[in-house]
Length: 186
Image (cartoon, rainbow, N blue to C red):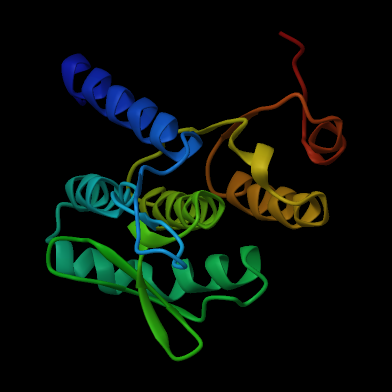
């Protein structure tokens, strides 16, 4: 069981990360004729998520990375229309997505791509850890930036996770209610 303060700190970090993702990037003036350069990359959620998965699985970070890699890539390629063909993590858990002839740190991706990667990583962790620890997977309307065409795919992914553990998806989008096993109006 996790300590309440730890959960509150994690929620605080996630809220700050979301606020940073929604805020326009800070720009540095460039030489005349050149575009401004973003200063601060966005936060990479991987180290925190992977370390929590390592705690649940009572394993080390590298073993967890090896366990998660293939499935995370499957989710990621499906969610991003194959813009990214792979994921790599360093020893600290920082992620790099592999695109056509490039290796991009997650913090340098667009906020939308970071959200899709984060969703892929979370679904992977839930899938791989639910055999050991049955916890519900709570998804709080994080799909607002996802293209409408992707929503049936995401719904099928959540439906698959629902066969492994309980999935609670809080959303105002009417399409998800049709695919769920049950709905509750709040």
